[in-house]
Image (cartoon, rainbow, N blue to C red):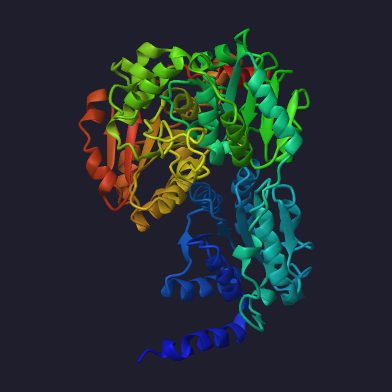
Length: 624
């Protein structure tokens, strides 16, 4: 007879909870409550108690460590894991240089509002001020002082009795708007301490947040949309949960849809209403849609409206009195004081209310129009497959002919266009910072079968229909960038976090040769973790954006050259299959299916035409 019949297992569990545990085990127990699977970092003496706890956790199938090759990449891995799962990302380092190495990755998460728990240790408190090795307390290299500028919550745990409260505070802060990294600095003497019992709280219950809305502003938004002569919608990354609702509202109003560079993932680029990307490396058709003289309302949802997403603070297109800014993050609203309306609250809930309002008003066929019916037909056709989908693209490329130019050396435009045709439709593409970012934003348009809703019955036709709040969209982001902070070398680490968040599915890390030289050694983590990541190194043997920026800005041509390196052979020396791609035929002859299904990474060294000018005019505009 099972012991569970007598409740013995529950009694044992209660006993375990009441027994003293090491502080590291308490920390891991809370991560387990949040379904966190990985802790990214590099071990060291002072952080050893956490790794001891992770070893015990890994044996029972709980959170386990993933060892990065550099602490900055550990933060990038955690950031990508959080972005792809919606969970808390966790990274750690050892004292001193380990903690300072991680700051760039943490700062990137801060700028991109990614929930991250950052754990750094300190030397024992009794050693503070005595010049201990790697001392990083307030009497040494003050790590807590450094992290205050790139975290939402930042504290030193000076007493073991503080730990649980401060951990709960940190986690709640990271997972609450405006979201972002939080930092706990834990001295070694605290880390090696025991606490009287296991977790005191069920943090998943604490994390349930009420949906707060501005009823007046939502009513004004509904009124504005109902009376607007012509509306344009701009989807930012902060509206990813609301992508489905925004698309449905746009379809109902037959309104053009645009996306910011980091919001591009959450709408199909082949949607009949999509007019392209606004902002860095964006499309002229997007600017034209905004500058249409008939447009009297521009609804921007979930966008920071900084340089990267506002077309370098474009007053004629976005930042003017036509703007309606829908936001969950108050800080983003600070950049749109000129807007005629600010709507605060959870964006998905706001747009569900808008749909309810529009559904309550009967619409005649004549109001929907023949064009709307044609768009619905195009929608259905676009969902069939991704072949030949350039035929249903409704936005303009700067140089459309070059996506078909298969001359040598390889044109970056042609390369971007080919990637979506040779890789499976579920491939995640990450574009590092540099020229490759501009090429990818403009020319890389993964076919996304989610042109419409998962459920084909629209909510305004069926009051019982409920949205999934974009969770499917969030977890199927096929194109990812490092917006705002734009760290070079972020993609190798981020591709690992992305692959771990999407087990067994291919990830393509598009990275320039200069960025690969910064953090390309993380390819060995992909090898160790058996991840099907294709590292696509775009080789032009220079700092491409620096080179072309100098040309476009009439500056001196200096300091952008790189020593030519054979990256395919470098990969092979690390135990990773490497292929040099010099011609279009080389690319087409690769066995992509094998690469996408093998238990480990592959490197493609693609030699591109270094003289092709990337679409970076808005960046030059922002610098001047």
